[in-house]
Image 1 (cartoon, rainbow, N blue to C red):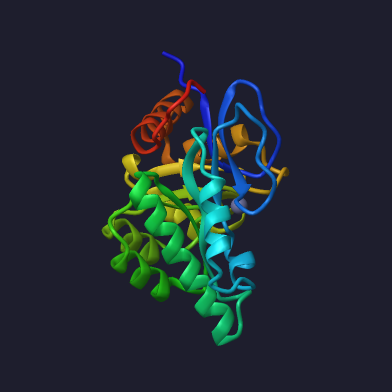
Image 2 (image 1 turned 180 degrees about the vertical axis):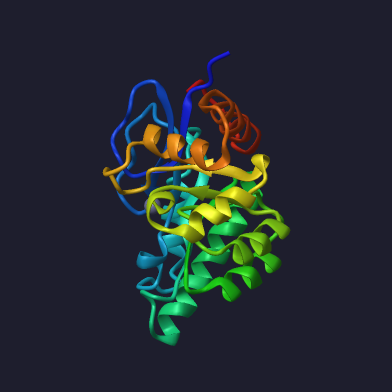
Length: 224
Ligand SMILES: [Zn+2]
């Protein structure tokens, strides 16, 4: 059986013959009908938002039957430099994580230079299936994330970072995802090929692994 390529996290246009989870900005106008999407307030935006309940309502309104995950959400302390900005990112991660748990949707996380705070947040939130997107950290960090149940999604880092490649090699098959994110330099097929080579797997086997993970983790309420 042939399994389609799955792009777990993309900001790009629709690509035929592959499954893509489009990352929608929860505060932007509604996404195109018919495309599965994740919705969330990105930490870069969250850092500028106060705790206004109307913002939470707008986020909730962006969740529709097409929504297969909450994301991307998370923490980015490279961008958020002040205590207030960081506090807001943490606040919105919690609110959106709680919503995801309530709706039984997985979360797609962005994390930069805030790993300890992310581990604390994950400990405080109800258990939610979690994907760390664009992972290019060390195998030590990968081990810690895997030990608390996270899935790791790899993209362009596989071409640029020896750490990302080393982490990919130790990621168990049932925790593995692949993605394009915002970049167009490496199409999804290239990322799959790179990952297959690194793990010494035939492409078809890797496609089966990622597709099975996708089906297991994502609550698919419509045909893709
Ligand atoms: Zn993204």
